[in-house]
Length: 238
Length: 238
View 1 (cartoon, chains in turn blue, red):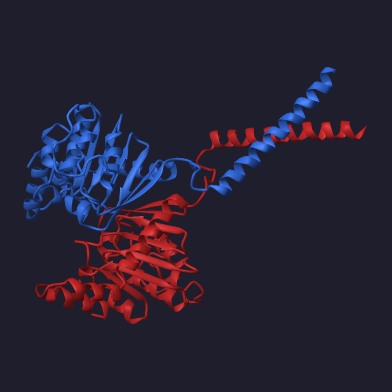
View 2 (cartoon, chains in turn cyan, blue):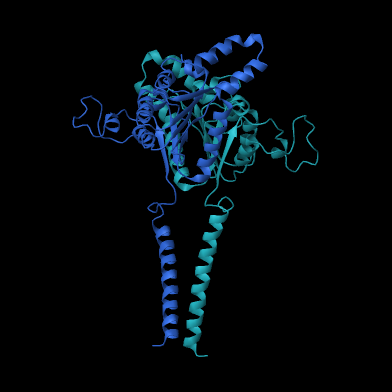
């Protein structure tokens, strides 16, 4: 068999292989559309969620089973949310209106203990509500900035490792998780994640305490002293 | 040239073409990743938004320019939200905690006038707030169901034509649109849209007034008469 013939046969073989793979892929997608992973991570979960023990997520290597009376080793919307938060390996940017949930606070503190950089943006007024975890988080040394410019900093999103977006209607409170009807959407789709990363950075810069302090000196009239006091409470600890 | 030779040449040509197209596609994606439309619609926008005239969205064929003093013909986060709502051609399913915004109410009523089936699920307590549009919408003949089972029905999502999801932190109120820091995410990604469609249908069925009425007769003690009254106010008009 000459070289030319060999090249032609290999060529025809390659065509047949390419077309077969394309066709098989198409057929597979048509027959089992839900089994094919279509691009980046996309998940949705709804609340309220069943109450379950979350101890195993925080101490996965513990040899002792948790003795609490709650159901163990079940997946709920809340455990899935915690898994996504705890999966952070390089950064966590959190922009949340109300933050009172103890498990989520524990997750953030666990990441901080692991040395993962964390930035938290929250609503100034809502740092003062009963049970707010912002004080404890700030005292642990995590960088928190408070938004006081809007009526409410009403976002509820987090960006994990600069690529995974967690967003929805859910505030980080016990009522939201166990009582309200809420939703959470998790995605790594760049077209959806990148705008949130930009918006976080913009809000982070706008709410730089140094910048705001300068603005407040230049602009604020005497009548806003009470608001100024609240800002300082929020900026420098409750 | 024999038939066999012809087949071989065509085969080689097909290989070359296939590989070239694959390679060019890959190269284009690498060089201009943001210019390639990657699958279904994906959009994100943030609030607060600039205040602009929305008249042209409701009366696109009017020969008279709107005389109002607001800026005209500019795209804002809010006009984009309105465009998505008004794009409905076969259905609108709306699941929203608070609904007081007049422009969004006008958009829903405009769709109803066009004969588009609309279903609205909302929080029972929040139908009673000042400026709630739920009463006007119900009086126009649009089907509304109120959730009274949870502490709050806190969702803020809509599904347009059974394929376009609009979700985020934004309630349908003027404060949310013009004052708060909020986000809206719009997508036609099936993996994200389908769970919301299922959840809407589940909540819609759960909050069927007939079903709830039977349950309330069977279960509710006399001490909940006040709540029952509120439910009825919500179900049968304010």
